[in-house]
Length: 157
Image (cartoon, rainbow, N blue to C red; front, side, top):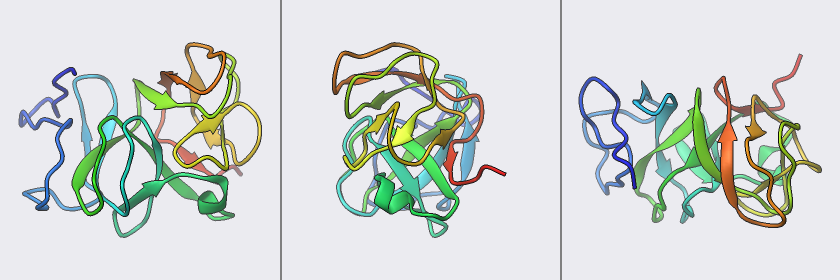
């Protein structure tokens, strides 16, 4: 796995920790891969490449349409697996990253939440603003996504 850092302090954003450390929850950092990463705490086990909801208290849970609900929701994508209560960084957008799909998806179309925890699709639930797939899949798989902005759901005007 690539060593992704914040570009100024040399923090490895691809590690989990059982202690909070020097950065508070919800801290946003730009990284050398073009993305912004946000510090969160896992609220349950998080799979590598799972999309997550980032709550206002810094808790992250694998994203589903039911969890996204009708409220504006901050969305991240875990680039590493995390155990329950681990502290780690999730990609929020600004570049390319790997994410999980629930089914076959097309390139350059709107991406939605699904009933499958952590996985997205190009049909179905809430639209994830700013997110597109750069590579199509023939079924459930991990693929490359791009988001030029911080990802959210239910924030359209």
